[in-house]
Length: 231
Ligand code: ARG
Image (cartoon, rainbow, N blue to C red; front, top):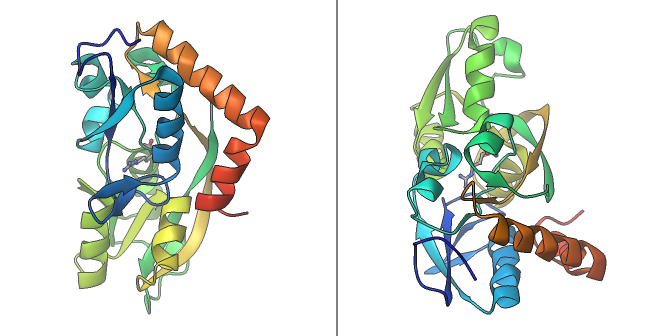
């Protein structure tokens, strides 16, 4: 059912990047999360088996992984942007997202205006990185790019960086897990996540959109939203 040269017909290869709770992260050796469950629905619809390809987010966000045939679809909390719509086939939106400013517990930073002279961690290739770069001069901080959210968390807890700007829901989940960070403020960017396929793979894009339509209608989406994100 897929026209990509990655995998065979019985396999849906899914590019992702962990950890990115609650959308994709490891539970033991298993990839779990909201995106992973939605990909499971897609695979069932196509009578395929999901195979995860873990890859750096840069290659996902730029479209290079998909266009090189590394996977059939990207499921990575991927914000729909004009650039990405040019580079890939982007599905309809399935989640409304914002950014957030996070600091280690005990930091005196109480807002973006306190970041002057500080280092702000972002994930390479993300919309958080773009936001941080666009506002670096205004607030006088230095954006520092990391490859994964896990690397950001390690650096934040060891004092390597002073703050981070990344997706709000992911930070909320990580803080809910007991990491010693404080969510200083949400940054409203009004983003929407979508799934991405190779630019010319209209067949698979139609299936993704149909899977989402059905999940919206039959209550599966609401159930999964409640399971992973809550209200
Ligand atoms: N929503 C942001 C973006 O699209 C960040 C996504 C990061 N995803 C991940 N799986 N690490 O740029």
